[in-house]
Image 1 (cartoon, rainbow, N blue to C red):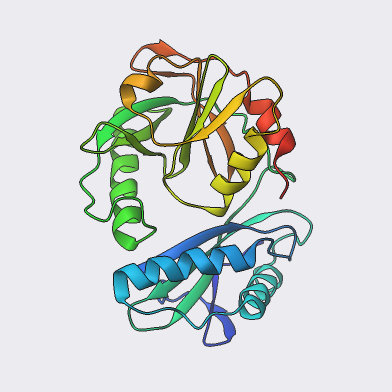
Image 2 (spheres, rainbow, N blue to C red; image 1 turned 90 degrees about the vertical axis):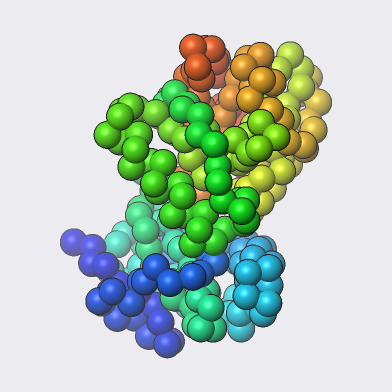
Length: 255
């Protein structure tokens, strides 16, 4: 049986509301057993967000992040041979806290079995897709609305320029003709891996740029990537999507 533990002050303790909603920046990471691949890249993205929001950087090291992940898995009673979704938060007070949000159903980075449809929302977050408490709060609010109003749908967030900012917090990717377009937001380790994997799919040209709702409505495939895996949308506003490159993308992503 797993328990809700957090890693703080160099020790693992039961979560007694220390996992607070104060202002924070964060990274969500996919472990490989007790190991944490790409830890350096995650810390770099965490510190970039911290510099933007707080004007400083965390003192978190790769060794500390790896140690926190390993201890949390062991203390919480989770299986050490499956991937886990680990979140690290860096607060405006200068402290950082780690927690395991969930365990993955997939032993490899995979195409997820679900095929949700999209629901378009206008994002009002002034900091865009920088991984902050504000981004997380807005996303959770949209998700809560969908839970009550439109079961089986995910958030497709658009900016004032009508570009898709994110899909359910993940980086959007579309395929139109023989073009694969990977959005520039949200910036993440997973998005970088997906962009590299896309270039390995024969017969397609990969471009990294933002794209609009209108473009997505003309695409053959619309999907998104995050630490949970690859998710392929079934349709958006009545426009249906196929699953064509998603399997290849999952195959070529190297964790």
